[in-house]
Image 1: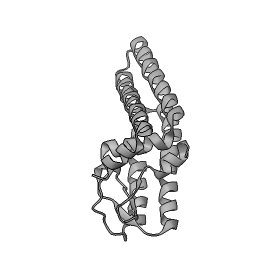
Image 2: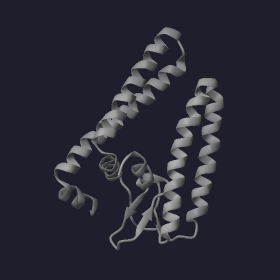
Image 3: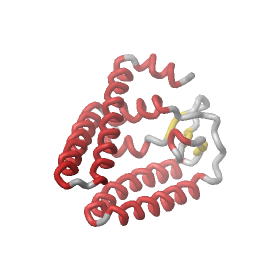
Image 4: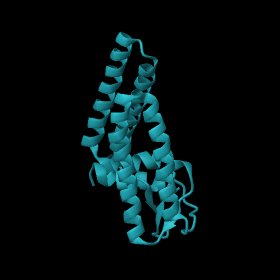
Length: 179
């Protein structure tokens, strides 16, 4: 599927009746049954664009001013969630849940081992680099950035473990998801 395909599909799940369920708030909310394939594609693109915009513009703003970056992130999240809410507001809620293990397992299989290892290495390098920069400059925000990238590295480490588990015994993992 690849990196961008995994981002687009990460909010969707097929329920027991074979319907597409979209989780606008990921693991933290109820899913909506999306019956229109066109809307499903639009939601996937919105999700992908959202991630790309946050990474690209957020990086530039962090270089300029941290408070401007935080303000941008807050405004963008409100706008992004509003657009998604507008798209799914007419669709019925689903009883399906999207748990942590299922969400990360699906994402890890969709991304593949190469992307996970790359992201793990990059996040570790960023964590160590921000720690080194913090020690030299004495910036408290650097400690926060170090912790954030360290947590991201830990998440990718866990995803690598889930990927190995899911690809070694896919039937067992599928059975766990059906519970």
